[in-house]
Amino acid sequence: MKQNTNHFLLICVVFLLLSSCSGAPKRYLAADAALISPGQGKEEVIQAIGPPDASRIVPSGDEEWYYYSLHQSVLDRIPFIRSFADTERVEALQVVFSGDTVKKIRYYVPVP
Image (cartoon, rainbow, N blue to C red; front, side, top):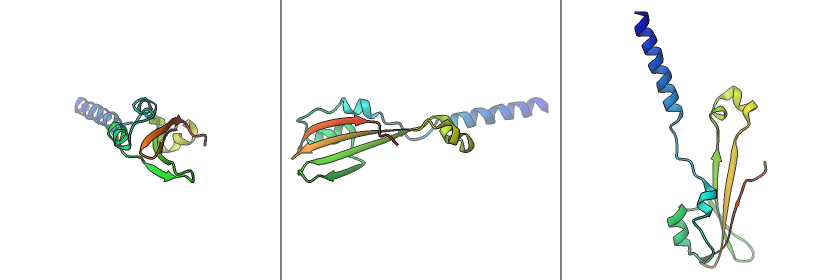
């Protein structure tokens, strides 16, 4: 009977470890920035890295698209340890359009 209990516990632990690895696929904006170059059109950018998370038109008339990605370690998902781990990192990618073509690309890590 004890051996069955040990097998059950082992299966539960393996299941928990595997389920903690699941989730949305991570986005790597530094790599995405390499797929874009000045002169490309909006449709090309959308095909390469998808629609933006946010956008705005600045007073100069340029349009800015923003992409964001939050990277967390396993420790950031544990409630009590999260406050001590502090390994969250946000990445951002800004794509500036003049008219319909890419004028500037900027990858950065915002400072909190």
